[in-house]
Length: 219
Image 1 (tube, rainbow, N blue to C red):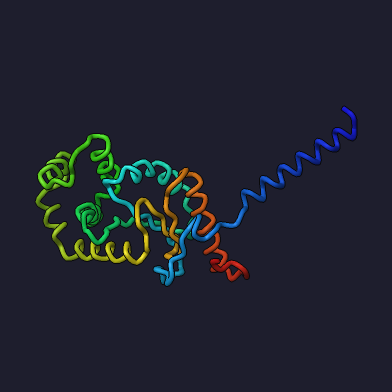
Image 2: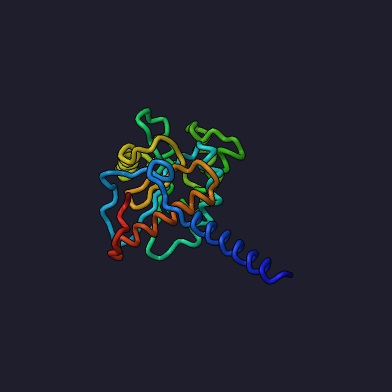
């Protein structure tokens, strides 16, 4: 190959790589990639908190679960994760929140969280129906009476009320949605990999603030 052509080819390759790197490292845009929550909803700065708002009856939440599960396997040690069952003012999603926190109180979330999604979206069971829900739980080896008592308990009802307040305070209008450290809200509309990459960038932004790096504040 002509040496000048080889040099030109090398230059063009490096230029393309540089442009690709710049695009990949592009600054996130408020209002497009995320929404800013003000005032922030997280006071604990010991770990960076990521919160998923979801509803068991939401097909998009069900579709998002596999990507989220893979992402959680690589969660850094300085990042914590929690789920919050969203509840809007019409209270139609309250039963799902009560179910979630009851399973949590009975230490059954690890075993049954995914099973609830599958029952609703694959098996087409109406778990919002009391009789159907209790029958399904019994089939999973859960004491239906204990479940009902747990669901009616002060502890579970308090968690449900907290979820309602957090849903409204976040300013979200649909699920699934991810909140990073109570400061950034990322609506999960689009390719899951890109959305989780956005969350990773926001985590790094919060981490940089914790380290005291200049210019790392949210814009």
